[in-house]
Image (cartoon, rainbow, N blue to C red; front, side, top):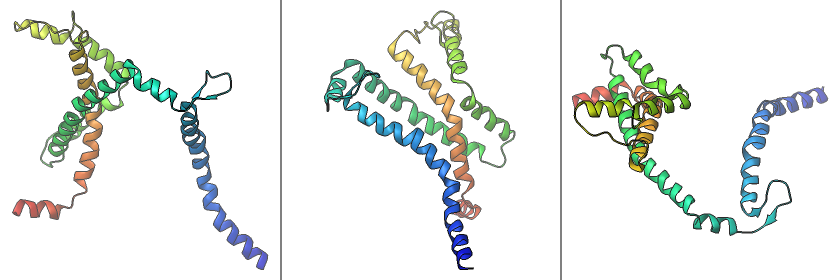
Length: 198
């Protein structure tokens, strides 16, 4: 009887850990190990075949002195400042508008705004290339039809940054809108009613 109780208690304690074991095995294999290995490799000289040679901070010093790396950091910062504030602002405005109960066809608009998020990035990039092509793009045709000069959207630095920022904003705005709408829908009606009275 005592052995049975001990066995039962042991199974009760061990069973939950067995159920969560696959997660931790996958996490260690595909998340923790690659991060630790990459960190070790960053302090080493290694061509992927021979043994690693410890070089300390030399890789980081070379990286900081690399003009291409520094330019990529600047480009990333510029793109972040271009699309993140606009995307959050537009997503918030759309979430507030489409959260109102008296809006007609709001489910259609929610779906239409969310669709770019689940659309293939290759397809979206191709569509934007067709729209902003310097010679045959729809954007330049619209500009020239009203007497304005064509803009080299994809062949200039500023134009390419603008188009890429527009693409990222359009693709991820629906996802952020859904998140904000979920937050708005958790606000109790009593708070909204109190705000209207105030």
